[in-house]
Image: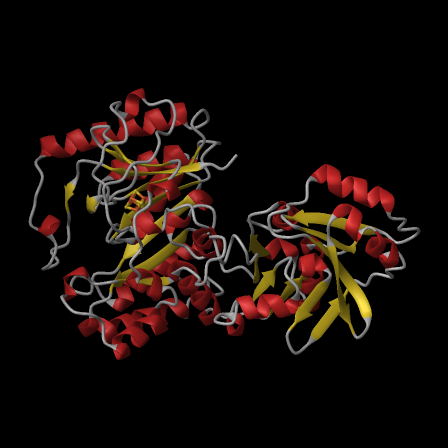
Length: 491
Ligand code: SF4
C-alpha cells in the first residue's frame, strides 16, 4: 500500500532574517508564544509516532511561516520522527541560517537517522551570500543529507542565482550537483519575458511547471493532509476548507480531500498531487522537491500520456515534465501496445522528446538510430484464425516487418468488446502447435504476440542496450499490460 505524506505548520510566525518583502521578518514572538509552538510541535510529533503505522504515514514535512530551524525543538522532533521505523523521510523548509555543526550534533544525539532527513533550503540574497549558502549546502551533502536549494525568480537577481547554481553544481559530493529550484515571483505583476523565462529554465529545468495554470481538482489529492498547530486539517496548504470536523488528535484515517481553490497555485500544492509525472520526476514523496534523476523513463501512451480516452492534446503538466526530462538529458521511451506507426501518429507533438520505445505490446523494441528488435511470430496458425472470423465476429489484422509477422490483432467493431471467456474459447479453437504466444484484450481488439514479448522484457532489452540497470529506471502506466513493467522497475 502507498504510504502518505503530511505537511505540518506550527504556530511559529517569526524569522531571524529581515527580507524586505516578507511579513514574518517584521513579526517577533514572545517567550510564551514560542513555548506554545514548542508544546504543540512535540504533541504533534508524539501523535505521529503513535499513528504512523495505522495511518500509513510515510513522510512528513514542516512548512513553517518564518524560520523554525533556529529552534532546537524542531531539530529534536525531526530526529525522533526519523527514528520511527514506519517513517521513510522527514523534512523541513529552512533558510539554512542555523549552525550545521550544532544541528548535526543534536540530531544524531537525539537518535536521528540522517539518511531520512530532507531539507528544502531557500536562498535569500538580501540576507546571505552565495559562498556562505553554498558552503552550508555542501557540508550537509557531505553528511549524506538530501536537500534541494532554491529561490524566488526575481529577474533582478538572475546573476546571483546563476552564480549560486554554478556553486551548487560544482559540488563534488553530489554527482549531479544539488538541485536548484526557482519559484515564480508572485508579486511580479507582469509575465516573465521570453529571455527571463529562458534564463530561469537554464537554472531550473523544471521551471515551466511553476508557470503552468493547474486547475484544482481534489480527486488528485487523496491521502494527503496539511495539519495546523491547533490540529485543524486541510487537504493542502493553499486550500482553506476544513476536511474534517475532527482535529488531528482524534483522527484515525485520512479524510476525503476537499478543496475550495481554483488553482493549485504553488509547489506545495501541485507537487503533492497524485499524478504520475510528480512521482517520475521527484519520487514517491515529491513534496520534498528532490529530483530522482532516473537513468531512463518508460511511459505508456493511452491512459497515461493521454489520461482521457480520445484526448487530442497532452495535458500541460505532462508536457512540462517531458520537457524537463529532455533538458536533464534523461532518455524517455514509449511503452505501448500501439504499433510503431500508430504511436508516432498519436504522439506527433512529443515524439522528438523520446529516445525510442517498446511498441506493439513489447513485440517491437526501438532505440532510435541505434538498434531495433522484433519478437517474431511464425504464424502457421493464421489461416485457422481467418477461418474463425465469421464465427467469432472479428477481422484479422497482421502486422509485419519485411514480410515477417510480429503481431496479430483480431479486430471487432468498436461496440463489441472481447470478453475473457470468448477469447479463451477462440484460443482453444486455434492450434498454435509449437509456437509460444500470449494474448491480451484491449476492448474490441484481441492482440496476439510472441510469448516473450511484453513491456517488462522490452524495458530489460533497452536497459541492456543502454548499459544501465532496470533498478535505475522508472515507468508509468495504467493497465494490466503495464503491471509487470512497473514491478520490474523502481516506481
Ligand atoms: S489546491 Fe491543494 S487541495 Fe486543491 S486540488 Fe490543488 S493541491 Fe489539491
